[in-house]
Amino acid sequence: MPPVYAVERCAPAAVRADLERLWDANLTLESHPADKFGWLYAEAPVVPGTVFVLRADGAAVGTAGVGVRRFQLGADAGEAGLLADLAVDKAHRSVGPALALVRAGKAFVDESFALAYGFPNKLAEGVFKRAGYTPLGTIGRYAMPLRHASFATRLDEQALTRVPAAARPALVRAAHTPTVAAIAGRAIDAVQLGRAAPAMLAGLRRLTLAAIPQPTAELDALWAAARGDYAVVAERTRRFVAWRFLPRPERRVWTARARAGGALRAYAVVDLIDGVAHVRDLFGHKDDVIALIDCLPLTLYAAGASSLSMRYLGAGWLTDALVARGLTPRASTRMIAVTAGAACPPAARALITDAAAWHLTDFDEDV
Image 1 (cartoon, rainbow, N blue to C red):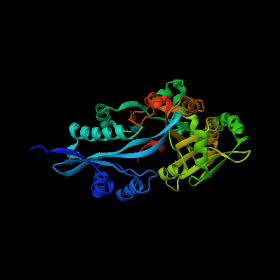
Image 2: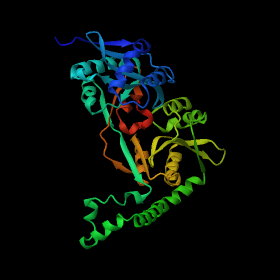
Image 3: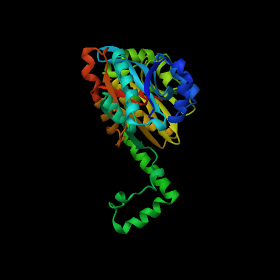
Image 4: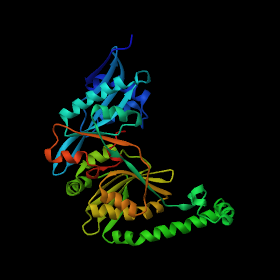
């Protein structure tokens, strides 16, 4: 006989062992399941009180969590449910059980929150759509090389077609000669960074940059002062940012402070991993965020980065600034699913499904 499925709404502590087993068996985790449980259900700025468990003949075979974030929604504010940790044991990964689990979660967030959003993987996209979530868009990645010597050997066929046939063999030999590649790479580095220098110097005339290991209380004042520059944005106070981005050896918070008075005007959380500077979050006053973007390439080049990368979905002023400064949009398929809940302020409902109203970075994703 096929199993009888049921979805239970539970207190996380009551099903901790089931959650940790399901996470360990079905998710790619950044930490031990026990550490993840403590981080999410004990240390979060707003501790979730609900988790959903899918049972087959009474046994726990799946789960879906709902994290809690505070949001600025136009001129209003509200809590958001972050759809997280959807995990179903392999033997039970058919559409019916997964759909029942996601629908139960949606009924809860519709009743309890101003909005809900999540980052379903490709296999779960159809389930989220059938459950009633709206696709907001895909979170794009923007990237630019900083050290070109490492790219010299990556001559593809398309690039070679733009070179005269007679010159192609010599070009390939030169690119694979380390000394030649290094010299050429440094020359290209100097040209590219030199083009950005005037904008960087303009920014540094009114801002000072510094790298600190973790966020400070200054973020509270920055959030209060700058959140009005964004339509739909999750709270970025010190408590939320420090909880989301725990200290790591490769992680720095780059701060941009006003030269006059020293007030924090913008910040970027950056992980430097294997030469790639991953901008995990970026927030502040609009003009100062753009000035920080102007300053980051040379600053991170000096710190040893070979390339710069950032994921973002949101306002055109920021995407335009990234592209104008040489960060190339890369193909993206990671869908963001959203829905407005009963507690959503009426004036904010149209914003929830408008991708250009959002400010989404790695900060906003569940981990």
